[in-house]
Image 1 (cartoon, one colour):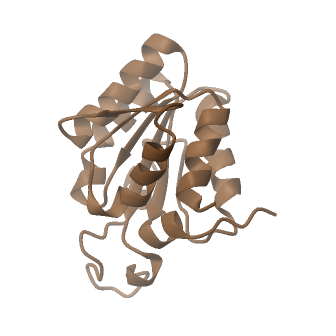
Image 2 (tube, rainbow, N blue to C red):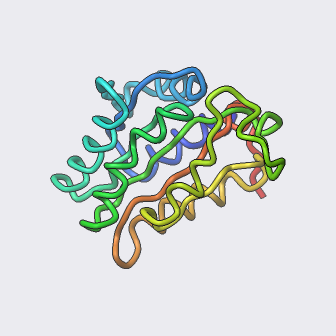
Length: 177
């Protein structure tokens, strides 16, 4: 089982029946995992990432469940900020899953603008409008990241969380300790 399949399985086990998203190259493995389980979890394709984020917030508002949305990297992920801010201010549980370039293409602390196509440090940009924002850098820690994100969104004063999901981690076999 790869990390994308694990995440979909986790969401299904937590009772998530609907996710909102917009396709892009750096989120395809996650979309493939959703497609494989389409009889158990419905994917609502929106016109843009902003619509996905607000649809997830609306879903959380009306259902009382966590709202889940996905985007691709760069500008796609940035387009979800409005929904994350709404979830933050109005205290609704929302999980954002944002694709990103493979970890070996991330610039790190090199001082350059980017090395990967549409690479963006989405975690630093969302830190002030989420309860938890993290890059999944290794399949070793992925299960812990997913569990923490889900719990943080729902515990105490609810709010949005974000998992930055690099392409190679989406495709990697998960290691559960």
